[in-house]
Image 1 (tube, rainbow, N blue to C red):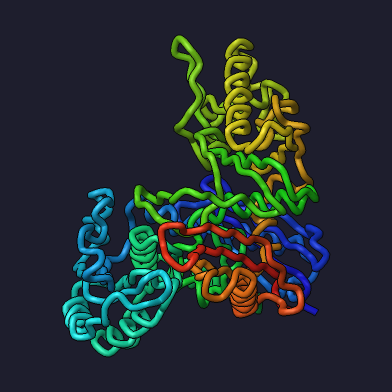
Image 2 (cartoon, rainbow, N blue to C red; image 1 turned 135 degrees about the vertical axis):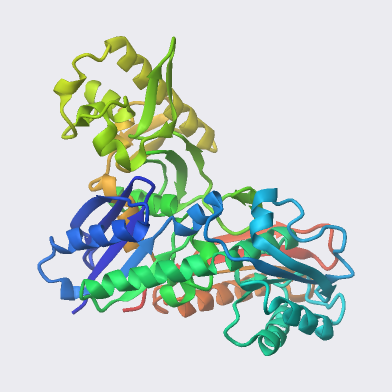
Length: 517
């Protein structure tokens, strides 16, 4: 029986891998240095962790959390040129597509753009008939000068008809193999933010195909016949066949994997979590076992979007952060990253890092040679470690929603930097296998479905609307691969929209369930 799962997560410094059994017990774990081409690090981690497993043929599922799409946006590399079609005239001509984008990213990504007649009101009533001729002309013009098309429509979460029809027309003009991203599959309410997320998604399609191909190749070379998935930024899974269509949904999945892994490893569903890597630290908060989602629009590479992302505070603090004494101690934000294993003083290098400081302070064990730090001034060590403690304490206080003390779960390869006591924290815990919590979070991730719509409570009644939303979310989770008998509702949010008639209320429902066997 194929009862084992493989979880892999690519970080900026390390690529972690674990094998987990059906009871959620870690069978094997490893860390490998992330390589400039991350596929190399994935291959090294998978090979190493499989070497610890008695029967690799018992693996049935493999999950990958990756930084590829995020890095492509941040570094402005390997992005596709995108044609942008908005179906919303005459209601939204005032702001053109990509108007608020950083200029350098807009020059790389944005090709031809146009706003044509179409779109809906919040209740699904058409604003205008779709201008099919204009869509066809746009498709003809784009066929030769862009790699993909992003289609957005006013209130497409209320009605998908115009976006689906536009996709049909574009396929007729550009060919059925031409990539088209539709906004209702990517974002939620908020036309401009949803449009931005859809454009980014379309620009990442080539990157996604390369990631999926590399992951599949790695698994095949290891002789594994498994179902494969990528983790999304809400802590749930997407089959690789879907991942190369919706890569933007994987942006930010790394911290989410760490938080989900920390929750399961510690057996706590409500806690603060700090994930310390080699370059940065992310602080978030768990609510019922899932990261609290951000209520604000999220910027990715300087672009405002509205897809779900965990509520996080990030800072340049990690095991590879460079420490300097130039009349006063400064830490980072620059880091030696995965070169810490050669550049740190305790490893024979000549760069003072927080790993050196942690080793000198007695927090880090089993790394490097303490004798190489004999010339390190004690006052420098105290100042640097004091800065770390103060910064972590401030981050935790900023993340909390009340004065109630919560436990803090410390995970990641740099978790040794976290002090044993902090103000406002009831206790600091390092769960078992905390250094590979991100890969563990990927391995135990579940399938999910969500719904984000505006309902008219005056027309159908509140209970009927909520029941319909719950049913739609559960159906979406089942389509994503969840076991129909174990789907549960994890989130219901009602936001009254007093500025629209008919008792309009925005309803957000999320359903989650373990993968069907």
